Figure 1 (cartoon, rainbow, N blue to C red):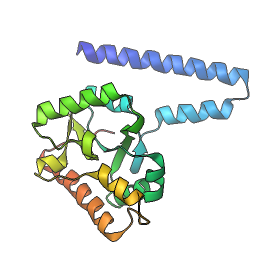
Figure 2 (cartoon, helix red, strand yellow):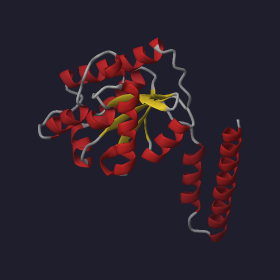
Figure 3 (cartoon, helix red, strand yellow):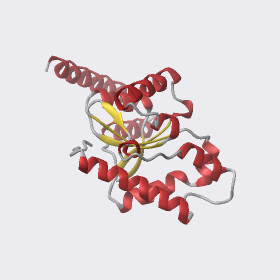
Length: 200
């Protein structure tokens, strides 16, 4: 309970600081629209489909015992664009009315990723790791879980992105799209089986 109180005080303080900075920027003029855009992003709840998130925010939400889906992958920006990875996932998530964060760990802090990697392997006992292979993971109860691992399946999204990125097809291709749908179904089944209540 004490930790929750400290967390709430820190959030209030951060909000007050952010509002103060925005007021100063507004008073200075010239940056009104940028300040408004930033305040909208800070208070906006995630939309149905894909929502970008930073590794730091994933950590904060995990440590705060929030429950949510996160698509984790490690890929070059040009491959993400040419394969239409995010567009295909976004469309598929919207069809299922799912809200999912996405995180490209390509440029993320290596120490933090390594720590999450070790945490995952210590609680799952599995070598199929969402940070190594990429997939939709479920964050809940202060940990990151793999629906693929739960169902005894394995899949390497990161390798698939590289393969598609060196070809002319995209994730809208029938076979690739079936794989997306399968990964979504595993995620939905996992949250249902484990009775996980998502928090957004």
